[in-house]
Image (cartoon, rainbow, N blue to C red; front, side):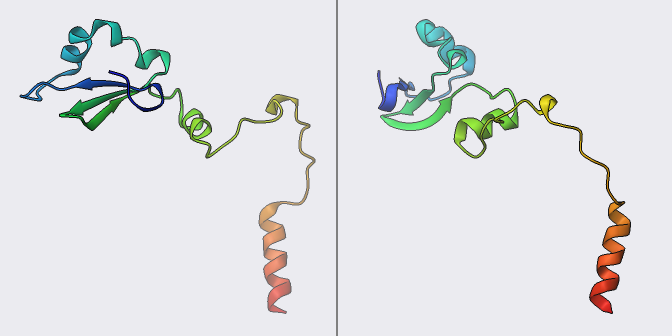
Length: 101
């Protein structure tokens, strides 16, 4: 059964005691869909109760996919080496000294 935005709905049986193996063997054509990026929604009497989807490669990939982050514009390996400057601890001590006096 097709759902919203190309999702696939799999209705549960009356006892609703399916395991992942049961879902893949009872619907052999659907077993590889999450691996290809498609979300499979499992429904109980027409109401969605679970979704099976791919696991992101990393947290960063999940953030990029959800729009919380964006891919880098440049390869970090091509960035120039930062110039050395004053020690941060010393700079912080000087800032605090200046604020107090």
